[in-house]
Image (cartoon, rainbow, N blue to C red; front, side, top):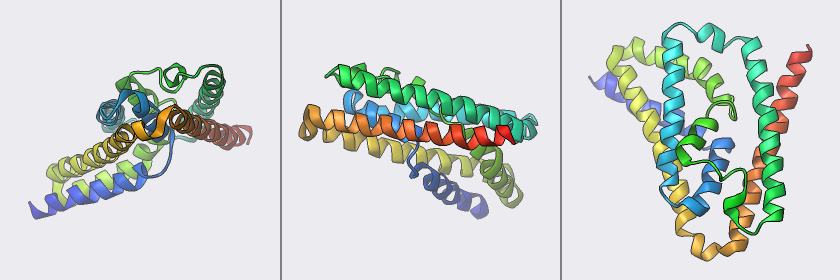
Amino acid sequence: MLQALVQLPIGFFIALSGALIPGPLLAYTMAKSSTYGARTGPLTVTGHIAVELVVLLLIGLGSRVVLSSQAFQVGLGVAGGALLVILGASGILKLRRSPSPKSTAVTKYHPVLGGVLFSSILNPTVIFWWATVGAATLMEAFLIASLAGVVFWLIGHFLADLSWFSFVSLSIAKGKKLLGRRGYRTILLSCVIVLLVLGVYFSVKYGLLLLQ
């Protein structure tokens, strides 16, 4: 039982190391929290976990070979990159035209839907991570502590996502009175720029692989 319990902090810190890296999901959470409040984090993570459970199911059904294949990764990477560029550019244009942060392309989605979108086609790295790092570390947890190890590892993983994104949304929500409209726009602009840069990165990276 002790070996199984040890998998909880392992899963927690492995997930946290990935969650702390700026990406589309973090950018969306920050942007949405400025208008939707502290509940953004937990709701976004709900959508994020839903995607992860589907990917886990596919891996369990033997689809890991497909998910980790270069053709699948390149196709998803190019498509996701292109959509991020479109979304980022649209967000910047709408932010310039309207003083209201609610009108931007980044914040128009409900947090649960945003969690799904920014954990799948708009963030292909989530699927790649589960097909490689996630699958490998889950297998190690199973080898060490059987099914109980897998369960505790997953609990730790989901707790890390919930803790971090809840903290981010709470921090943004609590600080919004100090930020004012200019602060909102600065946060939103920063977030859509992150999406735009990541979109260009994904498009170039996987586009070059497609040409090889």
